[in-house]
Image (cartoon, rainbow, N blue to C red; front, side, top):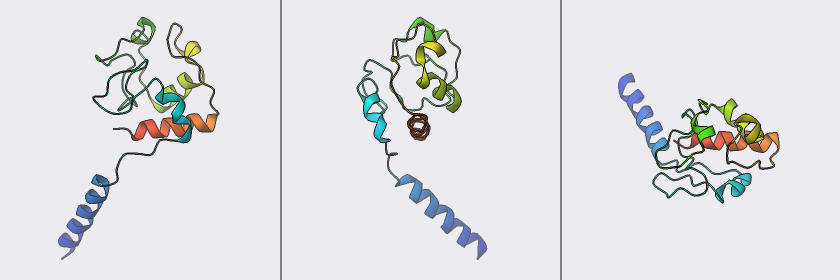
Length: 119
């Protein structure tokens, strides 16, 4: 009996996860969308697609022509690394093409949380 109940609970959780839909972008993400897409298979814009960026190596996607500075940075996009980069891209990776976008620390945190959910 316990096994059946456990399976029902697990099946219900999997169903909820499968039907949860895409994460909701924070309000500040509108500034990012001018240069970045978040859908796998979308054409790259001025910046690379952001799907699955958290925990990926910087400059590693074949579908985008990264600056040599970013390709050679050896950064792994942890949440902390993304926060630093978003606060001041040029100071974090001199030679990057990413412009500095005015964001509060709370907006950066919301953006990084959103990016982490894109997987």
